[in-house]
Length: 406
Image 1 (cartoon, rainbow, N blue to C red):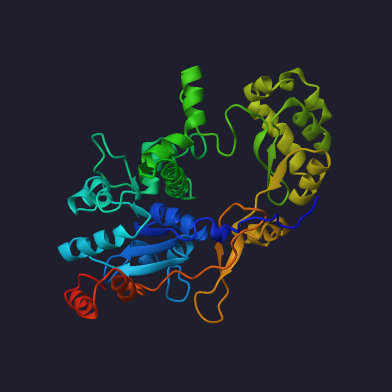
Image 2 (image 1 turned 120 degrees about the vertical axis):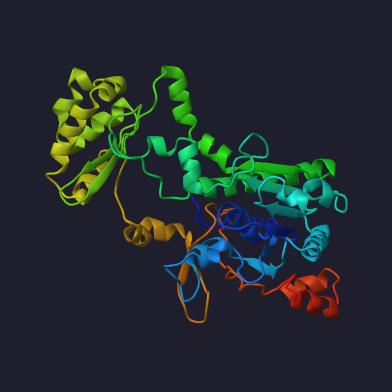
């Protein structure tokens, strides 16, 4: 099979020509708009004068004098500073929205509307506007006005209740899976709305929330609870309905073994020299192995601790058994497979540096966007964007002097 990229549009051309007015901060919203920017849209990031996005201050650690978190979610954007609490600032945003194709915000429900920046207000001057609101608990319900962050929502939606080891205190998933997941859903909703715009000529309002993302990630646990009536318990690295499907200690590390069916379990036993387990009636079928999970774990681990993790992986893969060494971040980044994927890419933040960021996690026609513009300094594009929106130099100077913009 040819490894040459297929003919067709490049990633950065997909949304070229579309302008996104980004009124978000922290992680979920900026990740959404960064996805759109990676696909070629022009992203205008609206930030508070003086401080900007909260993540600009999320340090240590730092890359130079900048927050790595801010750098991770704000490439390929322009920055304009506008005070959304000032009528003059609200008017400036409304004026920018007239030439925007997409508006994304992460304000609490009602906040945008109280500033004259809700969907119905903005679409009066722009009937084709695609509008996306990302909130914590959603647009309705008794908790809709409350703030929310990723770990808070992990607690509320039950993600924390199934994370960690049985008998120990709950722990959060360290990855910001609810924030980043919400950004992904928002981006998908926006793409769906753009398709609807092509069909009808009318813009749409997309709503998503951290709550809905958390519930979505709990789909399997909800289904199992409905089927059994039994609350799920924490199983560490294991999975409720499969065994062996978890981490095992080796002589010098850890190895995850994923035997998703009876055939693969037989291959695991063959690789580790424990054929007696494969022929034991207690482990004949997956349901049997789940029932006798603790005993099976001991048998497999007794064999695993006799060999280095790399040797265990070599044997398992030679027999076709899915497995992986437990890598830390440094090991993962230098792994040959990760390097060959080309998803960890350079981002020149300042002259001569070698910062790296994670690119968009898919290719289009065999291509992935590889050249990125570093996240902007605070307010770097304020004057130019206001001038483009029709403000003259005197008006811009007056707004800056009164700190309506910055």
